[in-house]
Image: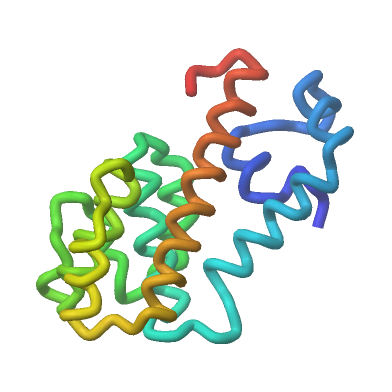
Length: 160
């Protein structure tokens, strides 16, 4: 895979023959590690309670919460039966995931407001500690990826 096929560069619309593409090429290792991190959090071997399609739906949801419809579309294509969760107007109740969706939204949009009570609510809903960590890892990666893509777009003069 070329670095220009990675999610970050392809969603940002960075082509190899541009000045931004040339700059990105000097940091190919960072693009490759970013793609590896994406694969680790979105398609791990051990998914715990969160299968790949659910992770993709949650990723699409966070992308939408951050106004990145191109990134959301990329993840939505992998969301399968969980695609409805990418709609930020839903709360996950229909899928029995209201606690997970509520926590995920809060971490994505209001990180400073996350408190011990939010973790306790997930535990009360039956989410294991290992799965809480998995949710946080996915959300943290998405925060990084969304900001990276926004920065790449700004480098080429596009609106973030």
